[in-house]
Structures are given as structure tokens and as C-alpha cells.
Length: 385
Ligand SMILES: Cc1ncc(COP(=O)(O)O)c(C=O)c1O
Image (cartoon, rainbow, N blue to C red; front, side):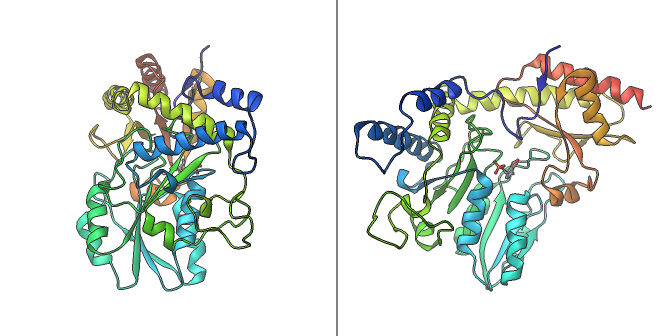
């Protein structure tokens, strides 16, 4: 029996075709460090790292490749920005759909005198832009937004929110975990000061690599969280201000960056729009099929517009965990059940504390996968009547 992987919002699988080969080639044939050795092979590796920064800078219309920072994942990126920016007395706004990658650092900072308020969402789970202005206080310094919900797929209007941030002189921080590589993001046009992304989801790279696209202003005011060797300015015991070194102390995840580079190259070759259109076509078929099954509730975003390929469901009277268990044990379908590290989003959607069963389609899924999931859900829902 063939396993069907429908948990691409967690991590995409399979990765882009050449990712594993490129990483293996790097580790086997030229796996040396950069910025530390003045030998030719190190410059070859540096070329790949710089090309990856350039690709990311182009993809997101960033300000300069030197302001593309590599981290381990979007969680680390968000921690670096949130903790590097906020000081005692500061106030920030977030949405009701945030992931714990935002909420946990902010909750930690409550002890340091940093506070936050939550912007409500409307019935389509889209942020109520009109509510934002009334929440801005004299000490508000930033708005932090999850670009697309990892629970129900809603894409937030970051261009309008960015314009509002600009008008009110607020920093705009975006968690692009669910959209980077799938939905176009224009850092300059959306006035994003820090775009935080992870490499192992829509960018089709390996786990353990992520990053931040910073504006020049943000790079100057952000305090680096990690201090250490950069291979540059070694005569200094202070952190260099030179970019990207200021935020990249310690040896980088070079195999990870090499793999991410291949993910980016694949997205460039196939076209982000084509990938998204394929995933949306699967989502459309899935949503239509779900509507014909009695007892199934589609949670949150119902329409195909302004969404990613993430769909959450519940079945009346059935524990979501048992649905996911049955999907895997009887139908070999892998989904993600529970609260998806986003308890506040589930409170917003009315699915807290049981959560939902989440289906998330990727570039490699097929219409047969969707049909198999619908067929299985049909049987599960009928058996519970
Ligand atoms: C919206 C959102 N933010 C943050 C994260 C955390 O991603 P990572 O584990 O790569 O740091 C995820 C992962 O599921 C997510 O969906």
C-alpha cells in the first residue's frame, strides 16, 4: 500500500528533486567552511552561499543580499527579531492567528515589561484592518503577522497592513512560514522590516535552515542575540556591524544552505505560480468533495481565494485524534491532528482544545491523493452516523 503524505504544512515532502544530491555532493566533495580558510575550495562554497542569498533577495525583493540572514528556522528568526528589537515598555500588535513561534517569545517577554494586544479577525479569518488603528498606543513599536494560517490557510493582506505600519511609523514583522516559496512576497512593496522564513516548507529545502530578510534600518537597530566568531574582524572582541556577519556568529548550516539553494532553483525553474496553482487545484477539489460529505465541518476559511493549500476539518461527534489515527492505520494517509502549535488560532476558530485534522497539499501531491482522502473521509464520516 502506498503512503499518502498530506502534511506539507509541517514540512514539505518530497523535497525538490536535486536537494539531497546537492547536499550529498557538498558533504562528499567540498564540505569545508567559509570565511575561515583562504583556500580556493572555500571560495567555491562561498559562491553557493552568496548565490543562495541572492536568490532569496530576488525572490522576496529584498534590499540587498547582504541583508539576507541565515538562521536555523523561522522560529529562530522570529526570536532573533522579537528579542533583538523589543525593550521594556514597548507594545506590539499581533493577529489572533499567530503560531507559538511568535506567541511564546512574546509571552516570555511579558516579564521584561513588554506587552501585546491582539488584532481581531472577521468571519473569513482575515485580519480586521479597521480595528488596527484603535489598538495602536503611543508605545506601540511593531506589528507581527502570520502571513498565512497554518491551521486553515487564510492569507492575510500584508500589503495593506504594511502600508498602515508605514503610516504609523511601526516596524512590520512577517512570519512567512506557510507562504515563502508559494505566494509572492514583496518586502519593499509591503514595507516589511523583517521577513522571517523557514527553508523546509514551501522553499522545498531541508530542515535546519531558515532566515530573515532585513531592511538596512532594522539591521542597524536590532541587537544580535548570538555573539561569537564570524571569521571576520577577528581582532575585535565585539560583534562586527558588517552585514550579514552581525547576525551570523558561528559556523553556518552549509549543507542546509546548499540544499535550500536547490529548492530555490527548482522553484525558479517550475515557477512559483505554477506550483501554487497546482496546490490550489487540489485544494479546490478537496473542498468541493468535503462539502458533499455529511457530518464534515470545514474549519475557518471556506473559499479558494486568498488561501494556501491547508484545510482543517472536524467530524461531528468524533475526536479529531481518532480520525487521524484511522486515516493513517486504515488508509495510509498522513495528516496532522491537534492544535498545530497555534492554540490562539484554534480559540479564534472555535476548535480549542480538541483541535482539527489538517490536510495540507504539496507540489508532489496528485488528484488521486485527494480522491483517496475524500473516499476515506466519506467512509469514516458514514461509520460514525
Ligand atoms: C505559521 C508558522 N510559524 C512558525 C512555524 C515554525 O516553523 P519552524 O519549525 O520551521 O521554525 C510554523 C511551522 O509549522 C508555522 O506554520
